[in-house]
Length: 488
Ligand code: FAD
Image (cartoon, rainbow, N blue to C red; front, side, top):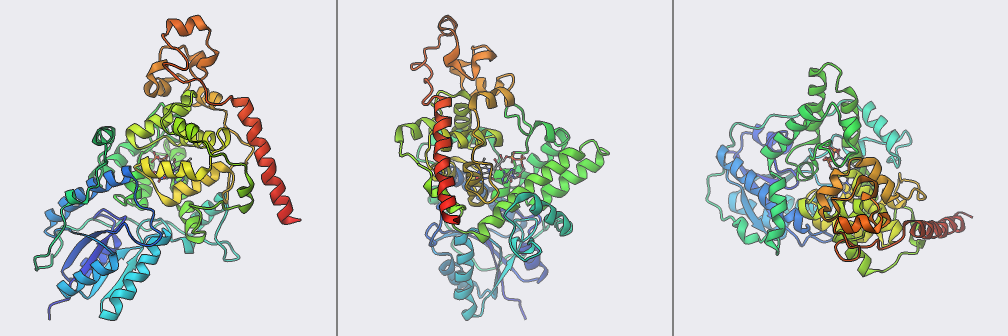
C-alpha cells in the first residue's frame, strides 16, 4: 500500500542539512510535500520587520531552488497556518505534518492550533527540535527551575553532554505526485517600500543555506583563532556575522558548534580560546531562548518589575536623532548608520547605542527594541528582548544599572584607530583621532580646516554626557526605592 504523504512545514529552519524533521520524514519512505506558510495574522505575532522580510524573500528563494534541485518543489501559501495545512492535508491525503519547534509565544500557540486542527482529521502533527543546541526545558537548576543567570546556565549546558551531531542534507526527496497551487513569492510583497534601502543589504549578505555555510567556513578559517581578542572591535571583521543565518535556521547552532570545534582541533590548540568564547556566545543565544520560553512577556515588560518606576521620557526628536544616526556622538551614529545600511550592527556597538538610548536619552528600551526589530536582518524576539533588558538593567541577568557606557571612551577603546567611525560618519573623517569621538572639543580652527560646521555638517551632541549620566543615575535611584518599597 502507498504511504500517505507527509507535509514538511518549514518555519525558521530554512535549510536542508541538519534538519531533523526532514530527515525523519525521509526515513519513513513516504512522499514529502515541503510547504511554507506566510502567516502574519497569528494572534500575538510580532510581524516581521522590513529587514527580516527582505531576508525571508531571498532565503525562501534559495530554499525553493535547493528543493527543486532535489525534485520536491516548495509550496508557498498565505493565510492562517492551521487552515492552510488542513487544506493541503485534505488535497494530498497527507497522514502527518512534520515541523521544527518554534519558541516565540505565538509560535508555540500556533503549534497547538495546528495539532488541534489536524489531529481530529487523522493527520498526526510531529514536532522536532533543531533550532537550539539544547531544549530550554532540559537545562534546569537542581531545584528544577529555569536559570536566570548566564554563568551557571553555561556550566549546566556543558554538563548536559555534547550537542547532537549535525545530520547530512538528503541527496533526493521523494515528491508528492499531485500538482498543487503555490503562491508566487513576488506576490507576497516582501521587499521594502523604499527599494533603494535594500541596496546595502544586497551588498552585504547572501541569504540562504549556501551563504550561511560559506560564512561559517570563512569565519572558522579566518577569524576563530583571534575571536577571543577581536570580537569587541567593530573596526575588524572579528565576529562570524552568522546571526541572521542562525535566526532563519539556514544553519543550525550544532553545525556552528562542531565546525568551530573541528577547526580548533585542526590547528592544534591555537584557536582554543576563540573556540570557547564562540561556544559561549552560542550559549548566550540559548540563554535568551530559555528566558523567553519561561517568561513570555520578556519582549514587552521589564523582567524586574520595579524598573517600571524609571522616569522614561517621550522624546520624538531625540528618538529620531538616534534612529537616523544624528546624535552628535560619533560611535553611536556610526552604529545606527551601519544598522540602516547593512541591517546589522556589531555587538559592542549595539550595547553602546542601546545604553545611550536608555540612559542618556531616557527613552523606553521597548522603542529601541522595536527599531531594531524593524531594521535588523537578525531581528530575533528572544535575543533582542533579552539584550535590551540586559542593557537596561531590568533583565534577569542584567548589567548593573549604574554601568552607563561613556560613548566617548567606548569609541576610543574599541575603535582605537577610528576606522569604524570614519567609515560610517564620513563627514568627520578628517578629524584627528584625538577629537574623533568628541568633535565638539576640537579647536574651532581645526574644525574649520576640516570643513566641519557643528550643527550644520554634523550634529552637535543632543545631550551633554555628564549631565545625562547624572540624570540616569537619579532615575535609577527611583527604581531602587521602588524595589525597597516592594521588598520591605
Ligand atoms: P558572533 O560574535 O559571531 O556570535 C556567534 C553567534 O552567537 C551569533 O550569531 C548569535 O547567534 C549568538 N550571540 C552572540 N552574542 C549574543 C548575545 N549577546 N545574545 C544572544 N545571542 C548572541 N542578536 C540576534 O541574533 N538578534 C537580535 O535581534 C539581537 N538584538 C540585540 C540587541 C541588543 C541591544 C544587543 C546588545 C544585542 C543584540 N543581539 C541580537 C546579540 C548580538 O549583538 C548579536 O547576536 C551579534 O552581534 C551577532 O553578530 P555575530 O553573528 O557576528 O556574532
